[in-house]
Image (cartoon, rainbow, N blue to C red; front, side):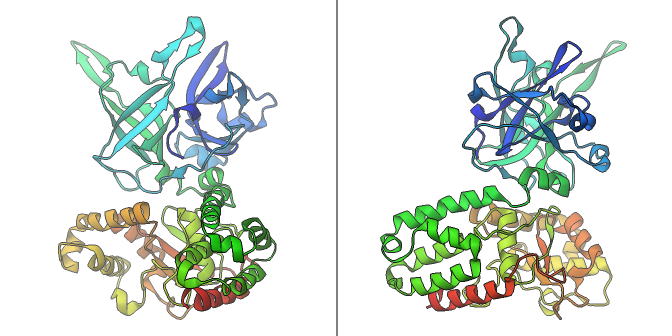
Length: 479
């Protein structure tokens, strides 16, 4: 869902006969995001019997959508973190599509766009509150920083204009990526004689969505555990392909019937679909069958949660569900190599020989070896490992390529290790110090995935499902 002015709500909190006002934006059905400081006594809000804070959505014609519950922050650590963002449960406008939460920090000179309810647009005598658009560019990013620095398109000399914009969504211009939430202006102080005067210099701060997603409580609040929005988006694509392919209508059960069977018994669904697809003329619709199959896999019900910006520990035991989990986490279609081994198409080989680390090396040296193996794939300057170790800023172009691949092509290039495999024994990526050094110093946007963590899979019949999916790939897609 790209930025839509009709979905930008005015948040109102009655306080001592007056009103605290801010802006809110829906992230999924029944959930919205705003700035925490516009909800008075937010730490005790859930325990209050009378819920008085509410949102006025432009499409709801004055109906008050009362905030029923604070989903984030929830723990003492959340409140003490200083992250001025709240995820709230309330009624939202109907027919929402999913917001794409940007897992990457935008950089200068990329542009942003927003709508909100600044005080300068109020008409108290008419009880009217008008939206105003805002735009500008992101300033240079700092890795692991909790906020984004923004510059406005044109400086507003009075920072009161921005009061009421707290909680407004910040989208990358001309995209569906929500990157941040307005939290404050950045005033400077100018001395006038002996007195000092606060002035506004056109700089703003927004809480960084990419940083917030490192907090599992925030991730669960904005996504929900089942990633239902992801499934809705990909189900629509599935139905579009089904409707546009005459052979499917003629030879296969209806899309509704197949989806219903998938929910009941995914193993039997894939097994039956393989038999049914053998009746198709694959020479005429091979690409459509492949797209149908991958989109159908995106509908497999499974629980996964965003655990940190780009480090994921998955409670699944097969390559199949590792790929499906990563696809859900990053909002892309699952895709496998053109073999029957079910390795994710964008998994980077991670053997010790290919990455070139020494088992006896210190964590920093192992991290540099791993990062250099990625640099050799995407770096353009031909620098040596020692040169990069001394000048890690040259990894920036590799990070950019990782981001572009995800955003433009849906390609989540990553390392992926089965923790119980022989390859994982003493592997550099199993060392938390190595992963931390990579993400903090070298390649902050490189996903690292560990799976098969638990004694038992959280998904019933996971092994059987992989067997039948592999058989489908071998006999239908690779036929």
